[in-house]
Length: 173
Image (cartoon, rainbow, N blue to C red; front, side):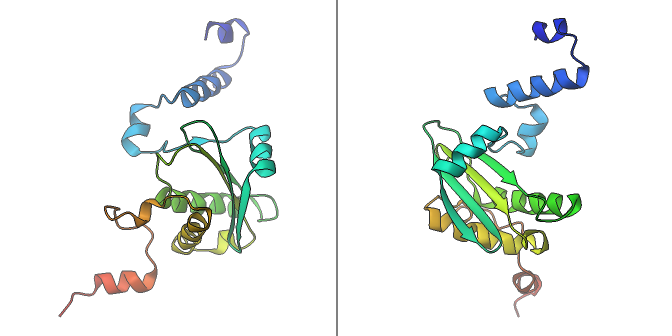
């Protein structure tokens, strides 16, 4: 940390480096722990993405592509990509947001050492979160990964299809 001060780097850059160090060491702020934000470590470097693309196994669906690589570490790392083929920034951000919601619903924190990359496809930003959640469940089943949503003690999904939501709201007579 002292070397950052001596190099004359700006405050924003210092905070980014310190946050990255904390993420690498697994140290999270109290707010992040309370909200459960940091469930997995992110894949950030281009070389790490390249390694998963080259050595990992891919599972394809019209809404999403998942690359899986088993690693020696005990932590699961996740990378999300939405290229310019998806659309402008608003569509890419929506695709990433919907992917995050679906992944949080299905990815358990302690599944072992995996590097997972989820690549948005052309129809991803047009899908509802419950539709993408079912796609992620199918991809997890194909890859043989444990699905948090299928455990008996799993909480009900946050993303529920409209038909099931209407049935749940109707009182039984």
